[in-house]
Length: 84
Image (cartoon, rainbow, N blue to C red; front, side, top):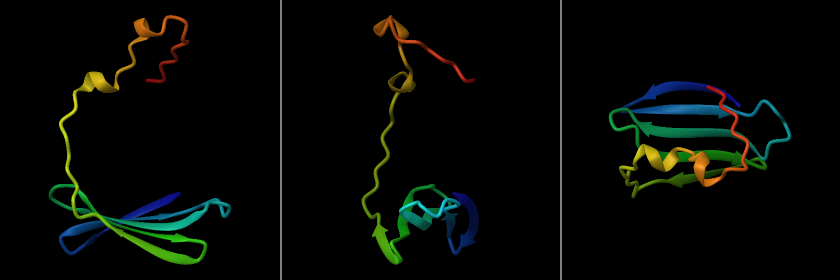
């Protein structure tokens, strides 16, 4: 996808356009609050028709960083490839 963004009132509007014509979603707009960065609307083009999803009850949760860390001791036979 090729991405661009613009200020739209008190929000940011992120515009995504598929570079691969075989993608099922060819174009998408995501509206995000400029102060809280909470998404409020997603508008996408699928099979030539536009669909809009309005997000009204978004709640962020505080999650610990350890939840997203891979513990290699739990999986001793797994190959770990660190791409940092």
